[in-house]
Image 1 (cartoon, rainbow, N blue to C red):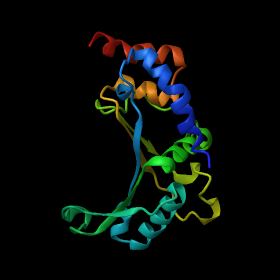
Image 2 (image 1 turned 90 degrees about the vertical axis):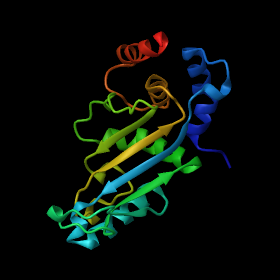
Image 3 (image 1 turned 180 degrees about the vertical axis):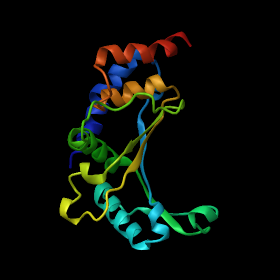
Image 4 (image 1 turned 45 degrees about the horizontal axis):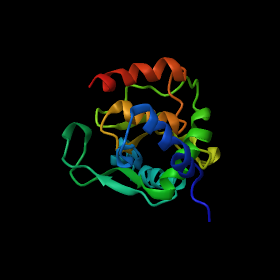
Length: 197
């Protein structure tokens, strides 16, 4: 059985391009994707626990694996929140599932985002990880529009082995992430600081 399409593309094409772009001499320096984490907080689950069940089901459909329910770490009286209450769900994908998800996300989900003008380039955390927020779960084709009871958003974090944002940006850009602006104006701006460092 062939591996995920995007992984093969990464191994055959992207690695060489990144090595040439940043002058990596050691193959272990070339950044790669280690995991993708989808996180979904459901504040209303405090009053309506069934909402969380729906979110967990939807996350399972989107990711192809069972989400972990997240509990509140401490009580917050103003929100009526008690420690230990389930208020969210998250999924961590690695390996083939992670590559398959990224492929679907880039080719199918992103074009379905309303008024889509590209993903922001300011959401890197300084350590080579990129997080983006999605306002509604409908952009994923796995979600049946008629079955949706409530629209909710989620955060998706792409964790890479890159130690600089410029390297992580170049990696995700080569893998097809539709960042704002054309290829040319964005990449040099991001790459300059790392070249000087």
